[in-house]
Amino acid sequence: MPKIIVVGGGWSGCAAALSAAKAGAEVLLLERTDMLLGTGLVGGIFRNNGRYTAAEESIAMGGGDFFTAMDQNSRHECINFPGHKHASLYDVSKMEPIIKNILKSYGVCIKTKTRVNHIVKYARNLKSVIIDGGDELEADVFVDATGTAGPMGNCLEYGNGCSMCILRCPSFGPRVSICHKAGVNEFFGHKADGSIGAMSGSCKINKDSLSDEVREELDREGVVILKVPEKIKRTSSLNKKACSQYALPEFADNLILLDTGHAKLMTSYFPIEDLRTIKGLEKARYEDPYAGGIGNSVRYLGIAPSNHCLLVNGLENVFCAGEKSAILVGHTEAIITGLLAGNNAVRCALDMKYLELPRTVAVGDFIAFVHEKMLETDGLKLRYTFSGSVYFERMQVSGLYSVNDLEIKARIKENNLTDIYNTCLV
Ligand SMILES: Cc1cc2nc3c(=O)[nH]c(=O)nc-3n(C[C@H](O)[C@H](O)[C@H](O)COP(=O)(O)OP(=O)(O)OC[C@H]3O[C@@H](n4cnc5c(N)ncnc54)[C@H](O)[C@@H]3O)c2cc1C
Image 1 (cartoon, protein in one colour):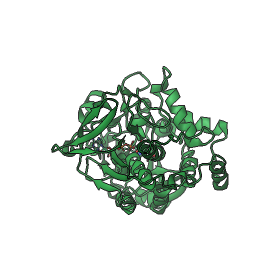
Image 2: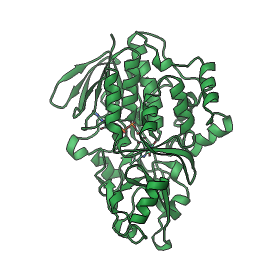
Image 3: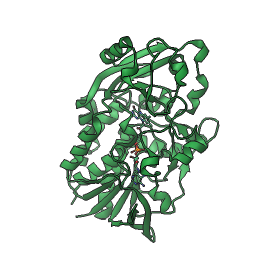
Image 4: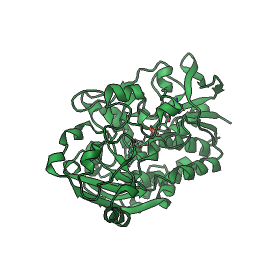
């Protein structure tokens, strides 16, 4: 049985572990913190705009376990807010154990509080990874799903300092990139002004600190839109955001709150004293990041170059997924790349032809498009997501965007991809 080690237990690492296990491998998933899901512990929005299509394509391909779990754990379905249609919001406070149980049911061995800090390499292959404490763990093939957020030194250099986000670097140690340790030349995302990285685009307010009126509306509708008084408007922060799908004037003119279990505030950060001048938010306090009054985590620091099968350039047995694999934003985007990386990791171990998703399906076109755009001069300044910005525009023009489940299923069938992730390769 091929042995696969997935490093990083965010959405992309979880998806890679799932698809490698479904393809018949023995899978070890290593996560440095005490919980899976990484930045997915504080996100929650899915199925908005083109993410609907990508989720349904993945379901038709046999990789839908997580989307089904998110649907079942949704606080709101099919809601609209500026620039976004038919969004669902999963409950961030309940998602993690559900995903952990799904992975365990497929036999994935999960080790949390296990941070990889080094690797052992021979020629163009990884032999093993070394974890804090010194143990060496060997595998046939590896997936680097370590993300691109932080650690603290980067948030200080490229942002407003450590914002005490969910990744909790002071407690669990900094993010370590496997590809970087293996000598791969990684690249960085840029902001519109050319500076490095991008600040995460939303923060969370403790729901109990909202007025009864705002909290009740949020519980009922899933979304609350509050006008920002002219004197505290902050349009300049829009172009620094990681999530260009929310860099719209509506998000500067209004405070948009979404009910993900906490009150998700759709702006990178907002001074708490200004926040409390708004009716209903007089007692507001931050839930994530704890220092949401001054900043947020900085991401897109350390992306590995890879081909469309997500094999890392220059290495023969390392795949990458999620933000590690491209300047992509989102849980859905992390999951679709994780599913592909996990499946190809097993193919690599078995010496099989790699799976490359065709451009006639949205998930295949997305991966190829992002890789191509990142080679263009200004491509590193953009963020890529099914839910907005350049890629959603492209989906609409090309006809790949669809909310018709039967049409999406038929498309996957025509491309001979039905249940491809449910097929045991061993
Ligand atoms: C505040 C915030 C809100 C967001 N909201 C949304 C949203 O509503 N909807 C949406 O679709 N997207 C949202 N996003 C974006 C989305 O969360 C990410 O793009 C996506 O989940 C990234 O997944 P990932 O697996 O690539 O990386 P990450 O989530 O960063 O996961 C990487 C994991 O690797 C671990 N790790 C790192 N180094 C090591 C190591 N050496 N050893 C072991 N483990 C390691 C980390 O601890 C982490 O758990 C949000 C992001 C943030 C920060």
